[in-house]
Amino acid sequence: DAGVIQSPRHEVTEMGQEVTLRCKPISGHDYLFWYRQTMMRGLELLIYFNNNVPIDDSGMPEDRFSAKMPNASFSTLKIQPSEPRDSAVYFCASSRGLAGFYNEQFFGPGTRLTVL
Amino acid sequence: SQQGEEDPQALSIQEGENATMNCSYKTSINNLQWYRQNSGRGLVHLILIRSNEREKHSGRLRVTLDTSKKSSSLLITASRAADTASYFCATDQGSGSARQLTFGSGTQLTVLP
Image 1 (cartoon, rainbow over the protein chains, first blue to last red):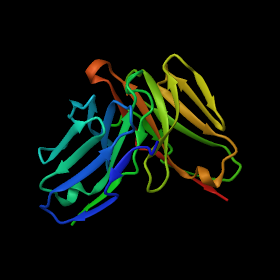
Image 2 (cartoon, rainbow over the protein chains, first blue to last red):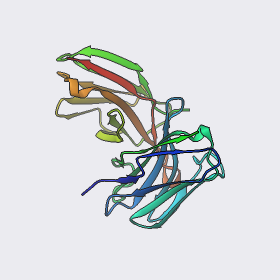
Image 3 (cartoon, each protein chain N blue to C red):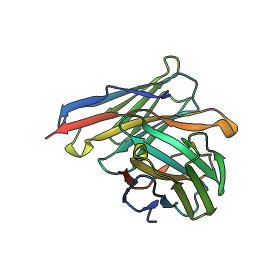
């Protein structure tokens, strides 16, 4: 298996632009998580899905952030409009739900977002 | 606030020495996990210890859990330069839809050759 795939790996954009981050989870995993990592705040859970349904989006910082999972093999995290404080590394992770998502999570390589 | 807090924030040791990192948490947990993150990479799961376990081994890794003190430690024996990374503890807490895995702020380990 290729593992969790994220694209793009790096994104540089200007303030006010729309940014879309993409994630393909590991096949067979039914939980998908979006995290944001910064030096100041560490690793933060933004939202997670179970069987393509958003379960907890309480970590989404504000309405500028939205996430979708149209099918079991694809998810997007969108920021519109983007702001410099959104600059961070965004990780997608997936896990198999048989024992609950408290089993190990498999992380993608991350997308490094820079908003100028 | 972070559920799991690692200590120390940074640790520098010589190759061959043992490295010990600690994690403290505040509320009861279902299990505790340790992850490693190499620079510029995603996190990689190392080991999981359940709340009813006290010690677990995996290769050169040894994890202990003391639920009475709400703390865990990760020991890496005979460290290698390749062990240089950030190490995070993650606590699985809550139940039902409120269940979540919360990551600490990490310990940056540097193993000098």
